Image 1 (tube, rainbow, N blue to C red):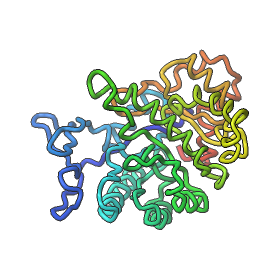
Image 2: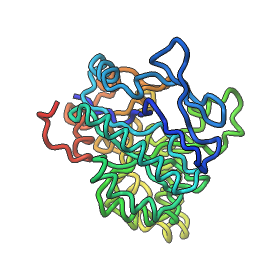
Image 3: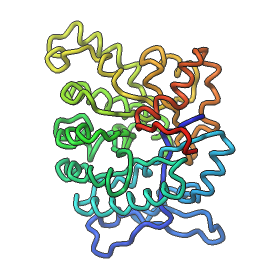
Image 4: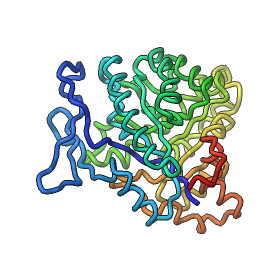
Amino acid sequence: MIVDVHTHFVPERLPVMADRLGGDKWPVTKCICGKANHKNVMISGKNFRTITDQCWSPQRRLSDMNNESVSIQVLSPMPELLSYWFKAEDTLDFSRYINSQLSEFIDSNPGRFLGLGMLPLQDPELAAKEIKNIKNEFGLKGVEVGTNINGRSIGDPFFTPFFAEAEAEGITIYIHPLHPLGNDRIIGPSSLSALIGFPAETALAAASLITGGLLEKFPKLKIILSHGGGNFSTLLPRLNHGWETMDEMKQICPKRPSEYAKKMYYDTLVYDVKTLKYLTDTIGSRQLMIGSDYPFIIREKFPGHWLEELGISPEMTDAIKYQNALQLFEINNLNFI
């Protein structure tokens, strides 16, 4: 059994709103002549990404899952849909549309799909008020959030109202890189942002949750870091050393940074067994979960195929494959598949 916590969703149709305040950045889908199962996601008049029916068709997705021995997928919106750059009320309307479409997708086969929705996090108070709808109206397990919201790192105390309500409601927060810092310094095609910018951006977000005091203030938060936490695991020894040698670190972090790091969860999408072994040794197998980035081009096919190469116990293997995810998402009935 494998639970894949890092997969993405785009509805077949995105709403067109004539009075939208997002301007030309409002995403729309455009059909591709001769390719019924392909669409372009257009933003600012340009093709942001060509997607296939893997994004919106439960049948197509189930076929791929069965072929790759994946029992359950956790779906979250394509990150560019998070739309923090709109007026908050517009993002809220758009979020409700995406969350509704995602909920319908999950209802097509609730034994195989779980969902993480989206919120207008540029207004933390508004986002906090919407969390109950995420759970009760849409039946989703939590939310996906960006590593930064319009340039403000997710660990900034500005987002305290959101994190307070997220902890109170027990939802899961999935942190995914978005518009990485330093894109202008990457040499080469724009697609390199996902390979170079994402790991650095995720590490910055993870560190900000510690240095911003949010993990100290809200110790019961359920947080997953995508892409294995990016470069965070190699940044962590530096943070620990700083905590041991710099008084100002102890003022913002009463505990060693590694203690906070081990309270978060990490997907396994690092593309390398040695790197994953280091992550396992540093964070622990109880904090890791399978992630593939399905259905996009950099996804890992046959997720978890490397598990035997890790050289860990059967108990640790099962924890990574499915037990950690089932526990985090509070899935107790294994007879629903």
